[in-house]
Amino acid sequence: MNEEKTAFLAFISNIILFLLKILAAITSGSLAVLSSAFDSLNDIISYLAGYYSVKETARGPDEDHPFGHRRMEPLAAMLTAIFAGILAFEILRSASLNIISDYHVLDITLYTFFVLVLTIIVKSVMHLVLRRKAEDTMSTALDALAVDSRNDVLSNSVAVIGVAGAYLGQLLFDEVAAIIIAFYIAYAGYQVARKNFDYIVGARPEKKILVSIKKKAAGVKGVKEVGAIRAHYVGDRVHAEIEIALPKKTKGPESHDIALKVQYAVESLKIVSRAFVHIDYG
Image (cartoon, rainbow, N blue to C red; front, side):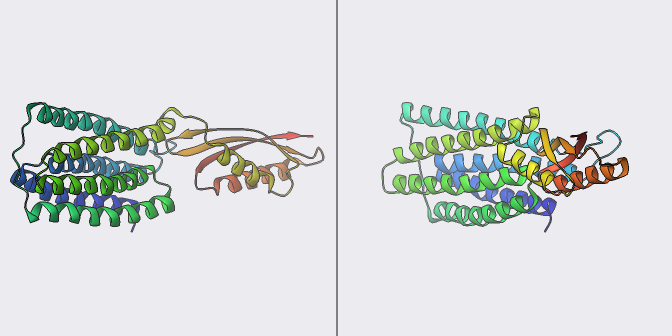
């Protein structure tokens, strides 16, 4: 299953969960369940953005985008993070107003528990599938969705505890659970934003990536020394400029062949989309 199909199936799953939770929230009056439903609404928007960005990325380079559309994925992730922050604020506001006004009208049923437990099971499976696919494809969009699914397992577990407390007569548990879920949503959005901000602004990649690039270049036969390496993110992939030193006796055609081998070796790293090689002699 490719990235596009994985994102689409995750999107459909979230629509189903959202509809089930909205019905549970309406019938039970639980703010915790409603918060969980809003979280699923955020997921729908997130997965829709993720699906679209993965589809755009798969188009590859064109006349107007010679280096492809890889910035679409981190951009979609950032928009998801912003919406998560807005959603978390609204949940916190509603829960606070309920606590202040002491407003509690709940009708918890077995269906309420069923929907939350079903969500935990589905999200657990989605997390495992999305994480594996994100690792295989190095997709930032799928990685963001995997993190989101993991947080959904935790937030819905909190919702179960809150609903159970309200069912046993401790009605304040429902609002407390909603507040905790709001913080989960906000924190998940922060995690996604922090990770994808560097992709958008073209920051330097992590040191371990630079080390891997140098190791690949140095491993090419004929390279005497690897000099400066300058790299930056273009979307969620890296463009790298590498200076290599060749022996002075190396002739032009041979130098060209070595430079190409260095380029191909560095570009064999999944994280690197383009490598530019500069030759010095010494």
